[in-house]
Amino acid sequence: MPTTHPRRQFLKNTALGLPLLTSLPFAAAQQSAPEAAKLKIVCVGGHPDDPESGCGGTLILLARAGHEVSIVYLTTGEAGIEGKTHAEAAAIRRQEAIDACAVIGAKPVFAGQIDGATIANNEWMQTMQRLIEAEKPDIVFTHWPMDAHKDHQIASLLTQQVWMRMQHPFALYFYEACPGEQTMCFRPTDYMDITEVQELKRKAVFCHLSQAPQDIYACGHTDSERFRGREMGVKAAEGFVRMVGRGVGGM
Image (cartoon, rainbow, N blue to C red; front, side, top):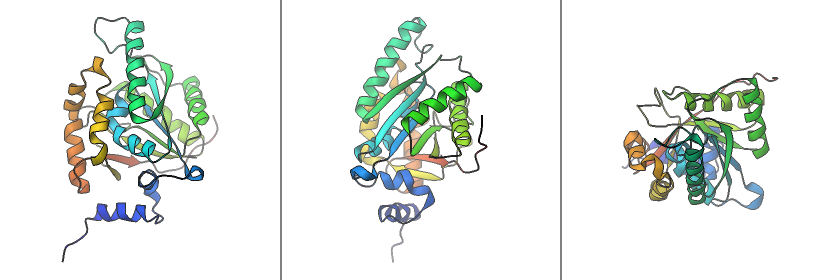
């Protein structure tokens, strides 16, 4: 007798609306949401191209299901184009992010920190809290905190602090960026089958022409989509770690 893959059964359960605590984004992407059931989704990334490559497929599926998706870019990638001034690079990468968001069906938000010089202090924690509160999210995605890139760490830390200080009013999930090279020690608790939107995700990533998008995929993302898919029992998937714990409150 054939057996059902446990993670396939998980997806079946979420589609049936069973009360699984880790199922919120995954159930939300399964079917179109009526107006009253629409969720607000926020993804925080260190630079343009991070959210797209890390969880672009999931964001596309959520947007397709009728949920409101916003992407908060901590920086505008000012240091990311050799031979360009910060202002020149920011203008190029800002437009690339806007174009990628159009593919995904998301609203771009630019936080205003500087690529390569990101900071975490009380002022920026308050700024990030204002940005996230303004979106009134039900679900937030951000970088996994154990990451070789400081900007990714700062984006993650600021987002975590908002979640804690607001007494975790939204579900918080971490995604991978350049798995194995930047993101380290990542063990997913949840998966999203992105097989049907894998090429559309690729189109969003390839909006970032200044970043040699083929190199973004070579930086672990092609292998990760395939490997997470194997873990889930599908062609291609994105993996996530769900945040759990208690908030600290106050400022």
